[in-house]
Image (cartoon, rainbow, N blue to C red; front, side, top):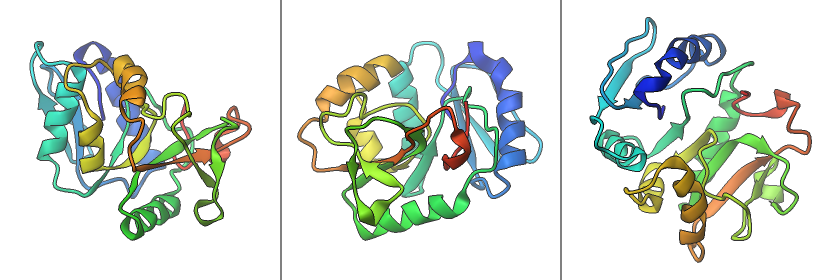
Length: 195
């Protein structure tokens, strides 16, 4: 969970909603911020502090280095769950990623972008091609941890990661699967239903 000290007010509701709507949440969750520490009852939480002199992307990269899991779920701290996480779909995504190591990401938040390429194999996900705006983004997603690390420029803020980063990854052989939702105001079909 990527955050910063000035957004600490979001931490309590974020993790309370994770407890409520994701009872099978990961055994260990990392909260990335500058200097403040935080704990939350019922959540095995590690606060990763890097001081005020690290960029957003440097903090993210250094945290990913500490994680041993092959796959991670990435979120920002103000993506508040409003319904139950569809754990079965996350497990399906992990299965796809195990079968095809070129899949870098399964974006768990629905997109209405019409340019996504349909794929019977990955339905209800579609493939985000090189022309997809913000193919690198900070929406909640299941990532291959090493692939995500390879896309990070440690000098960038989140907006640069999305904008410049999307240009930087043109030509990659990695696949980006995005959950397709033609009605984004209806989050009931999202794997990670949040606003």
